[in-house]
Length: 253
Image 1: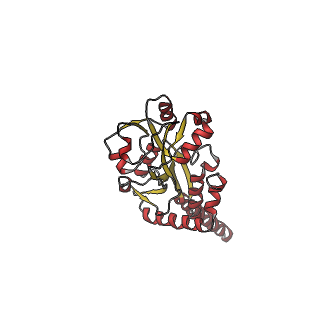
Image 2 (image 1 turned 45 degrees about the vertical axis):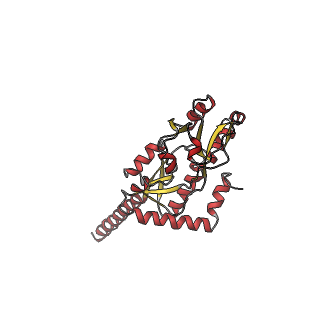
Image 3 (image 1 turned 90 degrees about the vertical axis):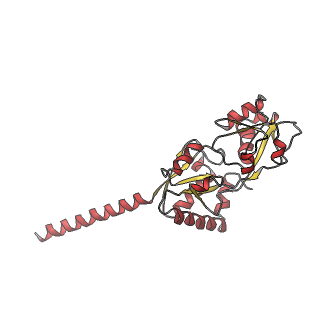
């Protein structure tokens, strides 16, 4: 009888221990919204690309089990704003977005946005006024410079993705388009190298484009999570593990 009671007690202890462990593991799972932004993020890239690799390393070090969900950027941002996902892996900062997201102080990646134009054109970007009368290709959901978005001296022509915009540019349906410099370089040198004979990047950036891990304000511990991410990013940059990821993906030498 005593043995039976002891066995039952031990089994009960193991059961409750497993329940507690399972609950803790479940609490530490975290959903990350992301998109196809080659060569920086992508479902078929190694570890989801450099941005998602860094995001995964940061959250793992903080004790989380990250799962990445790939959607169109605009949809992904909506999901994070609604609290369906906890974090967006890379987002440009705008005043409008700060209403729904906490931006980390440390950017996950720095960059710059430049214009893509037809090769041989003399035009170069010299502020918003230099866009007067032009048809500029943009993608919905992108957070460009506030003065660019507010300007009324040029036409914004929306396309669902970069290939569609580039097709319009080659065909003369738009005058210029803009994107992160590394994205444009990747597309016209690696994805469709034949375009390097037809298109070129303008040398003057419209803005620096630091990209941030952003936390949904719907989370009850949103600020604490953002602070933890900041601390871990700072640590990775200090111990050079951050730079090693960028080097692995060919973003720095």
